[in-house]
Length: 252
Ligand SMILES: O=C[C@H](O)COP(=O)(O)O
Image 1 (cartoon, rainbow, N blue to C red):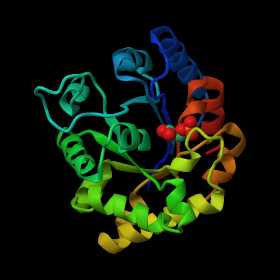
Image 2: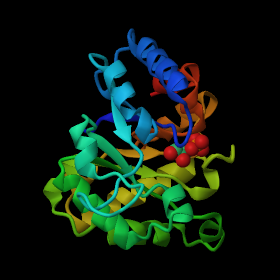
Image 3: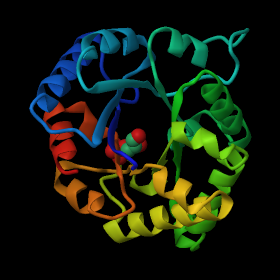
């Protein structure tokens, strides 16, 4: 059975002091929750990963990275490899976030390489995809999503999907306060499951967790997560306040 997941992407936020406080808040907040079928993941900036890992130890909080380079090592100034992440105890990495695509020119081809590299390092991948506003206005959102998944993931063997989490993040809903409606999220998630079933099989399609991301807040999380194909969220802004993040986890 697939798991529910609430993951907080801290993006380029939190200095060391803030990161320590936030891990503590999340850790404390989930202590009394029944989380049998729900995973809680936080993704701090690279420099705060070791501290977060240390402070999340012996709790249900898992720590992920926000990105990685596809090479194992080499002359890539400013970059971090999957092997390095694995070496400090990171188990999961976010790839394909729309901010990486938009501001750092990450195209499907490089994302495919990153996915392969992460899986080789036995890292779990949270793979983000989603259409821009112009795609939705042109009624191309299904096609855009389909292309992104096909180009970066559909070369994988079925067996690899045990280490893949998908995150649908419509670009127009990220950090804008405008969220996709529960119906809009559900129809894309269902479409993705159909694509997975066609390419692989029904069982695989049903086994992959698909998260929704884009202005998820305590006030709208419940109705988004209530959809049958929405298995949780990838949370940005609201993950920076332990109280809000916990409220979102409770909505699952
Ligand atoms: O990775 C998280 C998403 O980009 C969502 O960010 P947001 O919740 O601030 O809209």
